[in-house]
Image 1 (cartoon, rainbow, N blue to C red):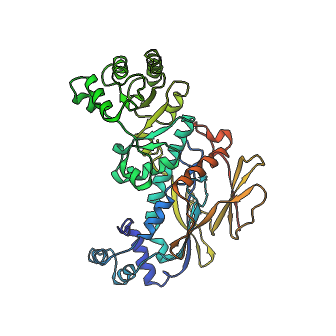
Image 2: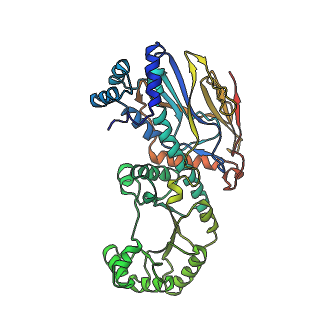
Image 3: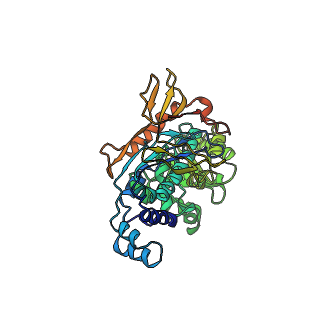
Length: 425
């Protein structure tokens, strides 16, 4: 499916004007970065890059689309002719998925003519702002969970296509599985899910509901025990499934208190290996508050798919160079820095990250403890051969998170985990 119309009209307005005054073929560099992190965030997580590269490859305009643009008065004849043959032929460099980013980190650099690069602005920002926001929220939840698995179950709380992208971003950030089957099929993410309260209410009583689920899925299933009375629900669950019951899920109430009571009751019934799964509007703060309770796994929904209070990563797409000449916006509150930039991350000998070094001009040679952050993603319009897999990106984020100073992993508000140092040309 073409992604050509996943854009804003003003991009075609600029394109048409540039074609008319012969500036459309000027060699340009656009960069994606955040001037600041969302309130309360100490780091950002790069996610959505692979989805964006796929979308760029599909950014074309068929005859019917071009005719509609012309007939609707969106483009003139010259612009329509240009779009009819459009295919991005430039270069893209950027941070690999799973890397952390900070204010002014150049997480994506798009190089090409003005005409071919300007029309990608909305596409790039819509993909990256969403996926990076979800991944950052999910990463914070993984930190709060402290090794306990987290299941993504937010599909019912967002747009159906956004749900798939959110599942991918959450899995990249370390979630164990997803309830979304489309995401599981498309990206190979493990799926998980048992039953809702409606299944219990369908049956004449709770025992019958549990028996039906165990008959279908075996005693290793997880039974939802809070439809009526949790104590009675757990008692019936163990009676039906036996002490080898896989798990019980609690979806409401004071989860900390209920988890302790459930653990004591399960142990008393001989179900010592039965796990306790909790869900119900969990975010990173409520997960952290349950750290000392006997919870075995968490289910997160609304908070993760909406970025847990930060639904966008605050990324912008700015022109920084024209025909080798640095250009920059100078407005007081939205200033940018001209010239193509690269970035290095500095580390202590112990491996702890200490600063993000953003350099304009010539690519610097890394010194001891430094590593270059950008890598080639697209050359001449074609993705490079060694793009990372989703599992590689998960591993990269785990490794990157370990390098943060301890303060950088706090859930409380504060400065970015490491400072950004801007080095002019």
